[in-house]
Image: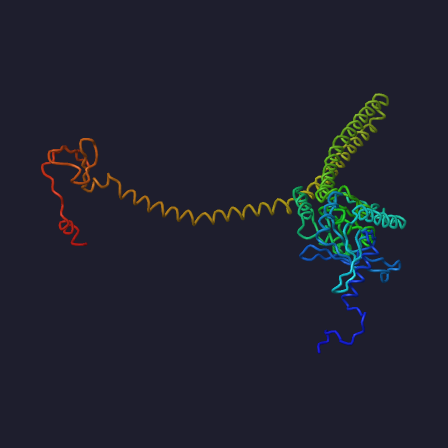
Length: 485
């Protein structure tokens, strides 16, 4: 007897498992005739099946961080999911349920009788609640860091005057990485960039960014600044950056951190903790380029200032010494002539010292300019010149073989043209016959007895009259050809 067959002596009134589950389902429908709103925190990353249904788990987290106080499985079926996604788009964001996110959902509790599985069937998700919870979480973390004096810590570091050694934290092979690097390369300045890749979206984002910052801090030589950047995204995408561990890592960084998240509307925790906030990855790179350019401009201004201010001062002092010398000579007479000589020598020495000082300043400025040029030339001009030489040699080597082939083909064509030249044929004894209209006679059928012809030979023309016409037989053709078929 099968174990699934009912016993004949089973007591009347007993319920099968399916009947039990069906009655529980009916009781749930009676207890919840209308949908209800439920708040909770997403415990695990939601999963979607091929039919478009979305499954996740809501919990009431424990205040102590231990096991959740309550758990319920949730299902957002494809039909309801389309409407929820539309409402999120109307609110200026997108539906993206993430682990750890606090949400407010509407639906009804349900039980599936065949499996006895209890779940909450979601019909709607409140976008305003989701966005508000993220903002509240950000304010909570920022307030905590501010109370510990960490919010201004990185901002208190001084940005170097010439930040050429840069660390970059962003996703590998991302648009943010390409935009940032292109802006630095177009400046022509010798930037050196050390890249520490990190995932910029997902549950591992905070830990990977913290690890990337630690790797940059341990890599010699010391960096001038570090850029943390990504190419924007929705408020939900950026929520991964609002992590207390990441805020503390930026605050403790030994160099200024520039936050270039790429989203001007939404504020993230790195924007609040970093030394400088940039609108986009390109803007972050432009800040560095402008700082180096400002330093070069300052050097030019200093050189001009020294040249314009030092020389007039020396000239005034020389004139004053000359005036004093003349006055002393006129008033003191012969007794002061020796002193006059000493003053003259002092004036010459002062002038020489002033010129020597100006020369030293000029040499120092020339050295600084030469140093900058030496940094730029090896990294920018010499590699470009070397690449141009390689390209020229490749073009010369690649063009030689096609040129020889074309020359050989041209010689063959030239020989063929010369072989068919009528002048050469006439010189060999051939003749060309034309009728009165100038048409070439190539067959006996083109003329007749009594017709006048003009015959061209190598050194002139002959006029003749046809006296007889005869066709050449096939046998005679073969004889002329040497009997060849």
